Image 1 (spheres, rainbow over the protein chains, first blue to last red):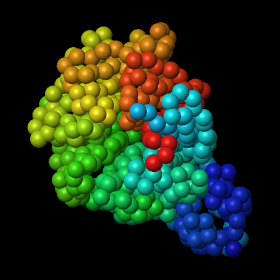
Image 2 (image 1 turned 90 degrees about the vertical axis):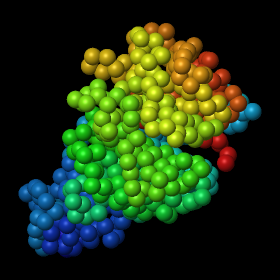
Image 3 (image 1 turned 180 degrees about the horizontal axis):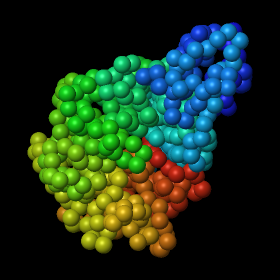
Image 4 (image 1 turned 45 degrees about the horizontal axis):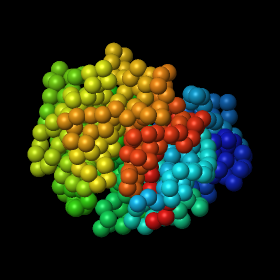
Length: 87
Length: 374
């Protein structure tokens, strides 16, 4: 299982939870798994061409995932952040 | 004859609903709704009077459609918001939905959405799921009409969908980089409708397409009459003619005929209002001279009169964006504006006098007036 850190912008989807568990061997698979339980969450983070949205950042442990193909290992932590987006 | 009005207000930071008494004198407020969400358009379905849709996004998250089927009592996110098919040949993804249009009266569950980058989406289930309209989005000229580098400071937009009330298959689009497009087969095929509309930012000042059509409106009493507030002036077209007439040249020279929007009278085909803005030099996009005013024509655009009673006489630098000027169908007609400075103003005497309904809101993107009760 993968621990996923949920930013404030997305807790409306997770009933307020800031940390949830998911499965998957890539960031895309983890997000797909989350989307099954929290419908709509993935599209707010990743666009329809599988690009991480401009003002969202995803880390696997300390390393930033530049694409959703980034691998995730068992025991890794995935952190989703809302990045800077203006005033 | 007047009746109570509900104003649906979309802003850069959320939505509000203002409700009036039957005289349109006192107003109550509900909101903010979805505080912090960017609400480009907030619309109620005139066919059932209960379905409401908002075009929403935030600074961080991707775009979505928020939807109520009980007049705003409860809200849920659309199951499948507008999105291009995966593998779109132009690599597009929806940045935000900009315009929401209830379908023709004969098609009760149909909605249309104009988005950025410019594209058209259709829903057949009251706005819950959306499909790409490939007749436009994959048109062979799509990248000519909607070049990736084209568009407004907030991105290129398909800013309006307008349906002929007499024919569900006949529709117009207003866009920021192809001007007006028309279909007679409900979106399967399209062609530009821009004859004599100026483009002062292209080598050919009167191209087939390339115009920035800020807003178009069919006269409710004569849907063959189309008013247009363009990036380059105010125009009118009486179908079946194809050649627009620049009626804005009759505006005062020190005001000009640049603006974002035009509102036709609910009953008189010759009457319409515009909200001029400063389009000189670096395009300040403010009320010309810091003196806000609407301008009204009652003769189809041959002459215009200034209507500023109630507005600041000086140092008023707001303007009014595309979806933020509207009217009601009362007699006399009410007019409503939402400003870039977060104010709502109204006139209950067809622009003769104006008064402030609300202030201190975020920058207002849309104001839609509907009868309080369907």
